[in-house]
Each structure stands twice: as C-alpha cells, then as structure tokens.
Image: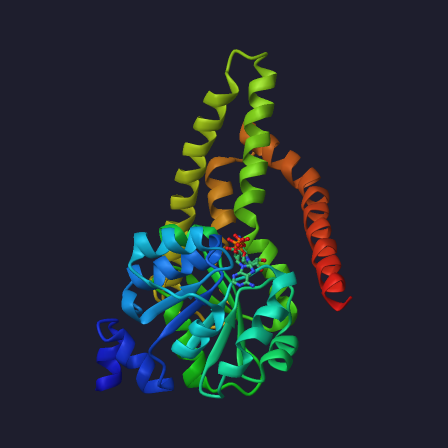
Length: 318
Ligand SMILES: NC(=O)c1ccc[n+]([C@@H]2O[C@H](COP(=O)([O-])OP(=O)(O)OC[C@H]3O[C@@H](n4cnc5c(N)ncnc54)[C@H](OP(=O)(O)O)[C@@H]3O)[C@@H](O)[C@H]2O)c1
C-alpha cells in the first residue's frame, strides 16, 4: 500500500530513503551537465535545494547556479562528499581520478557515486573510490524534460538501489539501463546526437538554399526545416505511443523502461515514411537517396566518435 503511494511520485524522497536510506545529494563540477542535473533534480522535487550542495573548481559557475536554483554552494569537493549520500561527479575525464582521490577520505560504503564522466570505466571508479559507483550519460535535451538518461550499474548492486537511481531521473528523462560495454555507442546515439541531428538538418537546409541559387535564404531554410523537425518529432512520439498502447505497454514514455526496449509492432519511422513517401511519388525518390548514402555517412559519424572514445580511454591510461 505504501509503496503504491510512493509510486505516484508525491512521496518521491521518502521512497528513495526507504530503499537505500539516501537523502542528500552533492554535485562536483557545475559545468553544463552538473548545473543541468542540479537544476532538474531540484525543479522536479527529487531533492529540496537545501539538500543539494555543489562545488566547482572556480567559483563563477557555482555561484551563478546557487543564485538561480537556491542550492547550497560548498567551498570544496570534500565538503560535498561529507554532506552527501549521493555524489555526482560531473568533471571532464582527465580530472576524474584526482577528484575522486580528493574526496576518498569522506567516502563510506553507504554513499553512492554517480559519474557522468565519459570513458571512465566502472572498474576504475570503484578502484579509485572504494565504493559503489554508477555511470550515467545525460543529454542536454533533458533541460526540457526530454531525451534519454543512459545508465550502467556495476555487477552486484541491489535492485532497490537501481530502482532508486532510475527514479532520480524519470521526471526529466527516459532512463535506459544498459551493460557498460554499450555505453559509449549509446552515448553517441543519445547524448551526442542532438549535435549530429542539428548538423545533418543544417546541411539539408544549406542544400535547399544553394539549389534555389539563394532565392531561399539559408536563415529561412533553417527556420523552416527546424519547424518541420519539431513537428516530425511530435508525429514520431504519437506513433510510438500508439504502438505502446497496441502492444499492451504503457503509453507513458516517462515510465522507467526495462532494457532493451523491444516491440513487435511496426517501427514509427517506417509508418511515418510510408505515410509521406507514397510509392512512386516524389518524396520516395528522396528516401531512396537517403538509404543509398546514409549508411556510409552514419558509419563514418559513429566510427569517428568511437575512435575518439578510444583515444580518450588511452590518454587516461597514460
Ligand atoms: N556536455 C554533454 O552533453 C555531456 C553529455 C554526457 C556526458 N558528459 C560528460 O560529463 C562530464 C562533464 O561535462 P560538461 O559538458 O559539464 O563539462 P564542463 O562544462 O567542462 O564542466 C566540467 C566542470 O568541472 C569543473 N571542474 C574541473 N575540475 C574540477 C575539480 N578538480 N573540482 C571541482 N570541479 C572541477 C569545471 O570547473 P571550471 O569552471 O573551473 O572549469 C567545470 O565547471 C564530462 O566528463 C563529459 O564527458 C557531457
């Protein structure tokens, strides 16, 4: 009975405390991602601003965040670690080891580190900290309550902790749990992709503007395709929700998902493409061109990014 009322979301923090006894959250590194997480955790009521403290290498971003969100600024990283049950580490890969060494004296087995740091493995986080660590890959789209939160748990972590971690994020993202070996590929697909999608769509606008010999200004082409992209996203959402209902799953995309998400019904992408690109029509010619050339383009996009992941991992070993 109690659990059911916690599930409504109204008793979010007690639910979390009941499961893993955690009540305060700390953030180390208040750059793009640390600030985003701090704001969303407070805004969605997961934690009160007074229960969230943060530190940053230099004070400017931290002070701005504290002013905007009401969170408690902390003068150093170890202060954050002492005051917090859950410690988010949101620094660049090269800085992670030193940050964890700095906070290690304050770490106890009851605490949990959640790292957003790309390419730093769970095994290294555990070896450096001596406590349980979880990896997440957030997306900047979560600022507007959309996008995916990729999560990897270490072996042996309890289901109650997993559930509690997923529930931290479900109000502003779609939590997706995966094995750590998938995390860099899924990071490219979800966290990097807003930039990739923007670049692809911008190229579409440039090509349209150029083919009109400038009669359609690039700024107009960008604005028109942006509006179309936004409408396309809504259509794909609706088709996906319809699929979810048909296959007996909930239509609420914010419900924590099991991993992987599979569906026996037709892909929303295929339905949308079929509905616009009628057989033998003009749009179908465009779809053929995409299907002929895109595998090479996206193969290169992903290969470039995967090579960069490997370089970062290598640099961390040196
Ligand atoms: N941006 C994304 O979309 C994204 C998505 C997924 C994962 N990630 C990962 O998340 C991590 C953070 O990314 P970001 O984009 O937020 O980077 P960022 O904007 O550069 O933020 C990093 C922050 O860490 C602070 N910092 C550095 N060393 C520190 C130390 N020793 N103690 C305390 N704070 C320290 C920096 O402080 P200063 O103000 O002094 O520079 C900066 O504010 C990275 O590992 C990144 O790979 C990023």
